[in-house]
Image (cartoon, rainbow, N blue to C red; front, side, top):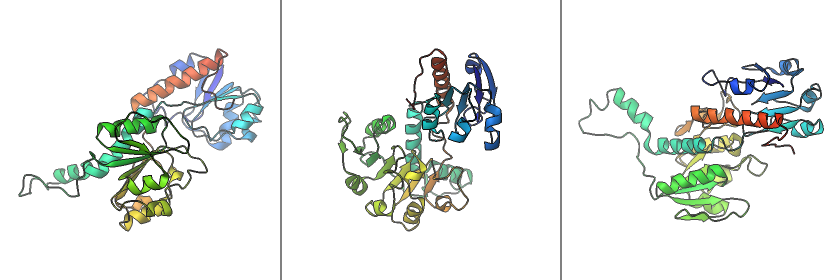
Length: 319
């Protein structure tokens, strides 16, 4: 089995090992692969491991030896899966490896908005506490989570994990899903319509897949229904939010703020309106990037490839 990893650096910048995958045969690792080098680098490959390199029908048709594409991610939209299937190529992804990590960052963004630890720590290091006449001070309103209402859009594994943490904080939980799901056992939990969620939630947190229905879901009309004190958290997909509408709402005081780990274009363009938006915390798509999370990711990538080699492919997305 000849395997090529096309864009290894983001998943493994050097702190992890590819040895398990190498044990399955000949392995070539590239940190990055430009479009014009894809065919050249993969022409003799039986398997490709990919994260964000776009594999089109045209490329697939130039790789007659290719039998398998393994994703270094849950998403697989960069692969023409229909073309892969037509050519007998199995495509596998890595589901649910980052559930806990994404839920953790969701609350990191919420807590930073409500407590602004970084702001206050910088103030102390800059001497503001040393020169303060009082035993304490605060530079922004400090807000408790207990008793607040979180509105969760999407209730897969990550949405459920977010609800579990919210329940532990003593929060009220509203959830919108397009199709009926069993009612969980959390206290103060309700499934509601999207309009009711927009009106009642103090925190609106997105955990939905990107579909035509969810693209631009958080838009001017949705925001117009929100509380003035509400915040938006997005750790799902950037295009689910109309970024200009969100920035305008925050800058005008229509809503309180936001925390996002994803943007519509990544890396963002310099004119992205959220980059210059006060009270919008932005992290560079790192919810999945914890050491333990990436160890788990690489283990599943190996297991996927081994299962394929053994004739029993798993996590296949193009059956």
